[in-house]
Amino acid sequence: MSGSRTAPADVGHIACIGAGVIGGGWVAHFLARGYRVTAWDPAPDASEKLHRLVDLAWPALTELGLAEGADRNNLTVAETLENAVADADFVQESAPEDLELKRDLLARIDAATPVDVVISSSTSGFTMTEMQERCTTPQRLVVGHPFNPPYLIPLVEVVGGEGTEESAVRWASEFFEVAGKSVITMDREVPGFIANRLQEAIWREALHMVANGEATVEQIDTSITEGPGLRWPLFGPCLTFHLAGGEGGMAHMLDHFGPSLKAPWTRLEAPELTGELRDRMVSGCEQAADGRDNAELVAQRDSAVIAVMRAMQQLKEAG
Image (cartoon, rainbow, N blue to C red):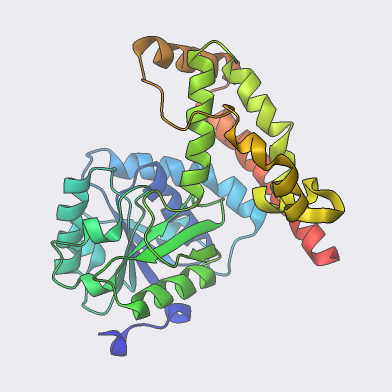
């Protein structure tokens, strides 16, 4: 099937199916990398919202540096899914996390897309094996799981399903790298993938602490931004704990602190999302926002992430 597939470095036209927060973030990223993008979303106001999202992201993308030929005018919003994918070199689907919807939509995309084109899903929880079962050519479907906002956060996790050819996984990983992403090509399907499993553990513990009155939203966020989060841009949790072991490294860390793993410090089962817990989380975030609207928060987040990314790049180049 892959004999006439466009080489990853030669991709020029990308179709983005689904244009919400994630899909729109993909659109902005691809436009900034110089691609022509055709988007489709069934919502009646999708075009207006998509253009607003791209405009909101563009200052950050400009700050990072646009690729040659990058232009917001390279975006077309198609009237039908079929028109969107008709001459695409690559398709990125970003529909809501509803398994039946994903199965039906990917089957439609599969039927309408030229046979050699790789189709990627932005799912954050479903496996490709679950989603590709209604497709006629499942061998070219992969998961390309991004992180919000996709135009700014480099990571994308790539993995195929039981019906996916390894060549499609390799092609997708190479394409995402060409498109400016940092790629983890997973060895096997894992529900929730890698990064989501880790951040979900923190999220569940945070909900438990709020539900039990042990910490506020502000305290929880500060505990990360002023604590472990400062160490993680350069070294992840494993190397961080390796350093915690001193000269003995991870071996000393595990031998010395291993018994504490049995201490009841964490509760990985999710707490019941009661109305009271929901309200406390919402009000806590409103207090933390301190009157800033979404556009202000996005601009501040993007500026901070860019500063961290630039500092990390300088460290890598120096070292």
